[in-house]
Image (tube, rainbow over all chains, first blue to last red; front, side):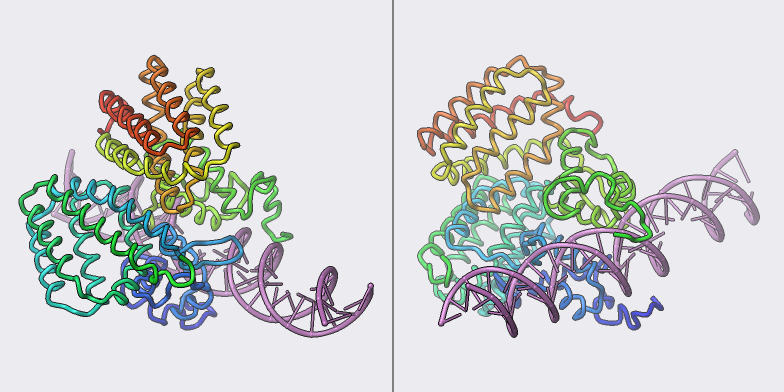
Length: 232
Length: 232
DNA sequence: GTGGCACCTAGTGGATCCATTTCCAAGTGT
DNA sequence: ACACTTGGAAATGGATCCACTAGGTGCCAC
C-alpha cells in the first residue's frame, strides 16, 4: 500500500475471506445475486462495485468473469456485466438438465459420503422442516442438495450442477414467494426418502427419488408462468 | 499506443479476429489447446503468452479466465494456469454426462435447424467419410455434432455441452491415434442415421442414435486405458 | 553427511493511468 | 416537426508499474 490511493484496502473486503481480493469480491457479489439483492437483468457496473468495496476495478473485472463461469453474470464486450434473465422455457430446459445430471452426481457421490455429511444432511433437513422463512428455506434447500453431491469427485459434474442451481435461484425464490409454502410437505417427504436412500448407500433409489423431486418441481413451476413476469 | 511499450499491438494478435484483445488471445490459446499443442497438465505462463502475442499480461489473464469458464484451463491462486488433466474415471463420467445432455440438446435444436445447417451437416459428414487424417477427423467430428446443436437456444445447455467436448478433446485424439481408424465405419453409420433423423425432424430417433453413439464411444474408450498414461 | 533455515528469484495479484468505444442528448438542417 | 449528425459524458478495455507469495538454492549448524 502506501500508494496515492490512500486508504486502499481499508474498505471492507480486506477484513476476512479466502485468498485474493477478486475471490472476496466474487464471494460478495455471489451472495448479493443469490440473495436476490441484485436480480436478473440488472446491470453491474465495475466502478460501483470497486468503490463500494474499496478496491480497484481490476479485481472486480476478474470477479465478474469468475461469476460468469458460474452462470451468475453475463459479460458483453464494451457493454458491461448483467445478471442473466431467463424466460420460462429456458428455466424449464434447465430443470430438464438438472433432472438428467443430478442423479448422476448423486450416484457418483453416494459411495464417498462421509458419516459427518450424512449427519449434517439430517440436521439441515430438520431445520428445513421447522423453518418457515422463504429465504432460509431456499438457502437450506440448496445446501441440502449440494451437500448430497459433495462426495462426487468429478469437477466438471459438480460445477455444472452448481451452475444450474445458480442461474435458476431467483426464479425458485419468485416461485416460492408466489405459491406460498402450502405444499412444502411434499418436498420434505421427498428429501426424507432421498436421505434414507443416501444412508443406505442405494444409488438406484437415490436417483429415483431425486429425479422425481426435480421433475415434480419442474411441473409445478410450469403451472406458474406468472413467475416470469414481463418475459416468459 | 505511442506508449513506452513501443511496438505494442504490432505482434500478431491485432491483425484480425473478433472484438477485444482478450478474446483474440482466448481464440489463439483455445486453438492451441484443442490442437494438442499445449496438452493436459502443461502450465501456461501469463508472461510467455503476453510476450508471444505482443500484448500485456492483463488481457492474457482475462483470456485464461474465459478459457477456464470453457473448461480448457484451470487457475490456482498464486500458482498460475494449467490445462486440466483427467483420469480415466473422470473422462468416463464426462461421457455419461454427454450421454444425458446431448440428446436433450439435439431435441431442443431439431425444430430450429435451418436447411442450410442440414446441408452443411451433410457436407461435413461426407468430408469425414473421405478424409483419413486424425486431426481433421477430430475437427470435423466436433463441428458435426456442435452444428447439430446450433438450433438450441438455451445458452446454459449449449455451453455445458461445449465444455464437455472441450475438456475431453485431448483424450479423444489420444484414443484415435492409438486405436487407429479401423472401426471408423461405425461412426459414419451412426452419423448418417443421426443426420437422417435430423432431416426428418424426429427428436426421438435423433436422441436414440445420438445416445447410442456416445455410449458406444464411451465403452470403446473404457477398453483402452493406455490412453491415460501415467495417471488413470 | 544431513536437516533446517534464510535468502533469492521468478511469477502472479493488484493499483493507477490512458485509450477507445458506446450511448445519449442537444443542435441543426431540411 | 422530424430525422440525422455531431459532440460530450460515462463506462469499459488495455498498458505499465508495484507488492506479495511460492519454490528453489545455498549455507550453516548439528
